[in-house]
Length: 371
Ligand SMILES: Nc1ncnc2c1ncn2[C@@H]1O[C@H](COP(=O)(O)OP(=O)(O)OP(=O)(O)O)[C@@H](O)[C@H]1O
Ligand SMILES: [Mg+2]
Image 1 (cartoon, rainbow, N blue to C red):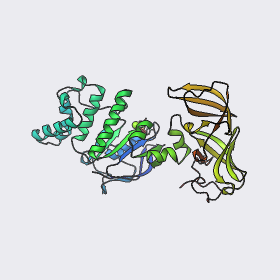
Image 2: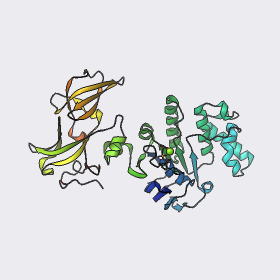
Image 3: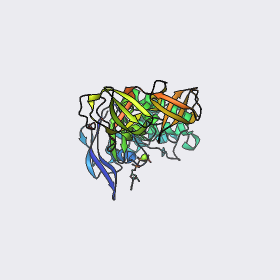
């Protein structure tokens, strides 16, 4: 069992700031996913937790004990890497038992623990094989078993599924979710795959250039992205973002851009005068409706099997709509779409931060970023 607290941690490599003042409180038993684009500092943060790197500033606490300077061996944490890093000359059993052997546990104790863990991961029949004689998924499970054998308070995993093919990845993903539920241990899991993050996480910490951009449940990040970065990172295809104006019309506030007018469901006096915003609408929230006021010309239709992605040119911008198939539209068609007021997100055009209007209709008309 472990609570992991990261307190204003930074890591510099020479002049490069890989992790910038990250603060994060990971509850005991949580499945926290560190998500973000390549190079944003996910692995560095995980290695700081594991003790494989030492922070330039800040503290790391494990169950309220300061472990910032503690050696990796003495931390009650087990790390699983993307490359399983199994010893090729040892059998599966030898690999799994290795952490106990280096702790000089008795042979009987090692055998017992290896068998227990192997049973959980259904590796019992494979214990005598060397890694070369195991499939990718089996090697992955051996690496997991090696992490589990010590009964760590927390598991740290760095893209553990990225070497697996699609079918095996989704099977192992389900296995990891089940494992987490069964063990009740804390998981800190690095990935740049948003499907993994959305399906596995109890909370996601989305990183951008060394900082945490937003922390929350998958639903919070998806439904109320704190910034255009979050809105544009999650979702496939991501949220449509376009420059627009917030205007009052017929007593109601609207978002308006070339070819697009959409009511926001807010009273006009929420806001006085014209204000520039960045507007966002998720592709799956657009639908064909002749009464709508989003008009565009179809540039391309992509068939996804169950759905179609319809790409539209609207003035100087393009929008993508994800529609049930068959949408019955073809390239060159004029199309009229609609989005519900609740599905329109507004961001500050400069800072990219979410505006407060939608949640707080009494807020000042000035663009107030969510703190
Ligand atoms: N030992 C190191 N020395 C110098 N720079 C490093 C070192 N380790 C990482 N970096 C740099 O720090 C930044 C963050 O690296 P990190 O490996 O944490 O990214 P990441 O989010 O895990 O990316 P990926 O998704 O590609 O694995 C990168 O710009 C990387 O080049
Ligand atoms: Mg990495």
